[in-house]
Amino acid sequence: MSNQNQRVFEDKSVAAGYTKQSALQHCETVMLARLRDKLIGKAILDLGVGGGRTTPHLTVLTKTRAIG
Image (cartoon, rainbow, N blue to C red; front, side):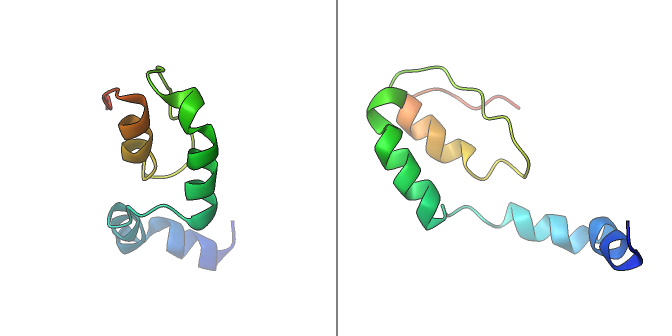
């Protein structure tokens, strides 16, 4: 890992910035709209990289609760 990448990786303000983000990106909005009927009432596992920003949007569609 380069020194610049290492500094960003270790910077606590970077992680704090991610926790403040909650809006979906346009492509995510489109994707969830297309999958809406298939997701309603289903159990989901939101497994990915990041701070869980999309989880609340998924739980609204699936009517499930977030664990973790």
